[in-house]
Length: 174
Image (cartoon, rainbow, N blue to C red; front, side, top):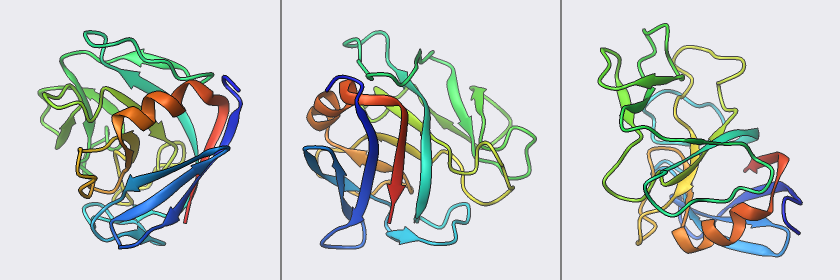
């Protein structure tokens, strides 16, 4: 099944900030934003946007175990990798180099949350200021505590799932 999973579905879970990621034979608990699934995404609302999103590409930490992502292209993170979250910036919802004058999510982290991270096509290809940035599919904290609006699964689950992702993989949220 390597590189064969084309559809990942994120379903509501037992509480607002938790859900289930279902893909082929996998049914994995996932963390969502504290506001849960939202139909209209606004920057900083703590919601995980409902919709259908392509997995555009992924990032991995090259100083840690080499990640596999099936058919999804992977790029190495750099120590200065960041993501712009400032709706007033021309770089809004784009990768940037840190430090930056823009509000930036640092992607090179001490924890393992972004060791393998996939960029979702949420407000990326057709970008609108203030409608959400840095919505990723990444590794969750051990207690599956809420994300800022991303979808996150355990590191062990990510290691099992990622090698099976197809190049055309989409995530259907909600």
